[in-house]
Image 1 (tube, rainbow, N blue to C red):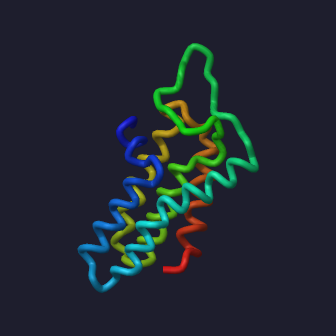
Image 2: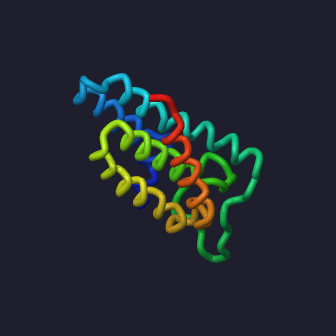
Image 3: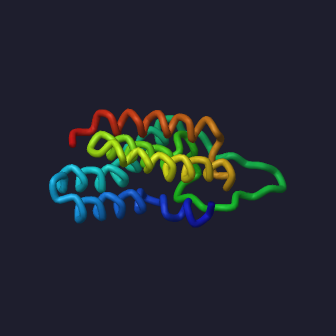
Length: 138
């Protein structure tokens, strides 16, 4: 879970996947580049929501978090937002890219496990991500 969490930091894994798909699929290169940028862009949008909501990360007495975070703000989960944004946008380009939802789900489930988020943070991030993935121009 820690490795997955680190891969999801700043949308890095999603950027890499988007660039890789752009190199492989020349018919949709421009769209895949947009997907590559969507991961990090979703993180920025997510932080704007975090700054407004200002929900603090979970604190469990005697059970410190297993991961680190760049801020103490929790709602919504940026990992879930970027993951579901990219998986949704990618599926719009190529339906077989729906397999990316498996990675999105794994990254998202890991956040409460690592003590970084409440489950509602992850759910809200996933909903925000799906909305971004559906409405981002490709």
